[in-house]
Structure formats: C-alpha cells, structure tokens
Image (cartoon, rainbow, N blue to C red; front, side):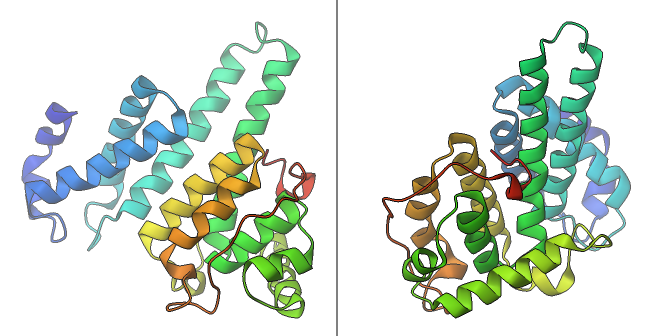
Length: 239
C-alpha cells in the first residue's frame, strides 16, 4: 500500500483536506480496520482497503474533503461486488447451502447500509429491534425510555423511508443526525447482532453511542431484555 500511496504523493499533498502525511495515515488506518471487519479476513481486508483508498482518490481527489464515510462506503460496495464475483466464478462448485449463505451475507450488508443511511440513529435502532428481533413496541419504549406512541411513529416513518423506490443511498437531512463515529459504531453493532442473531449485543452497546445519550438526544440508555426472537424477513434477510 505504501508504494501505491506514494505514487500519488504529489497530488495528495495538494489536496486541501489531506495536506499532512499523518492525516492520510489516519484515514487509511481507519479504512483498514473497517475493511478487515466487513471481510472478516486480514488478507482480504488489506486488499480491499488498498483498492478502495485508491478508487476514492482517483474519483474524488478534487473534492474539498475525502471523508472516512466516503471511503467506507466505497469499501462496502467493493466488498459486495467481490462476494458476488466470487460466487459467480465458482457457482458450479458451490453447493446450494453455500450459495444461500452468500446471499445472506450480501443481503445483511445491504440492509444495514440502508438503515444507517436512510434512518436517524434512533430510528435505526428501533427498527432493528422491532423488525429484526421482533421486540414489542412496549419493550422498545421501555428500553429507550420513550412511549409506545413515539416508538410506533418512529418505526412507521422508518418504513416509509425504506420503502421509497426512488430513495437515494444517502440523505442530506438524515446525515445531520449522524456523526461518523456513531455511524461506524452502529454499523458494526448491527452486523454483529444480526450475524449472531443476538439482540443483547445491540442492547449492551447502546449506552456507548453518543447520539443516543440523554444529554444529546431524547433517547436514553438501554438495559438488557430477556426477550428476543430471530431476525425476520422484514429486515431484508439481514440475519
């Protein structure tokens, strides 16, 4: 990776948001961690990070900023394409259950991207608990120190946003509710919860999410619930 980065060193130094070597290294370090997480493999993660970083630079080097959110989004799309390509190349050799598992992984990745780009943090968590783990409205309201009416309204709005055929990958209005740290943290939490089919992972992590704390958002910390079911098909086969 170092040789590839140095190849464009002159251009990088001219970029107004990446004028220092340590800024580039920090951005790439974060991208490496993210790529290793979604690929679950050190070598795939390193290759994915390299390709995604260079692609971001080639396509967005004249923009005022290259953010972690941008390179993470590119990495996510690159990994989806890689999974599909590998599946197609070895389709004749893959037994049917393995193909089904490949589809599940792709669907889970895409579903979570929809949640974190189309909904507010609060809506994403409520929707995941209701549609992914079949929590009752009363349980969600208790966990989030809210009312059943407020939870019902939030989930209704979430379904409307997710159901729009012309919905974009990103929504400027929704982006105002997020910071990059929370978006990446919630994405990882949802991945682990859906993959393990265990909502307790999500519940235990919520108090650590800044945008859901009581001093920055009407929601408050959550406490574990003994009740949960496996994710439903309404969360786009996210499990």
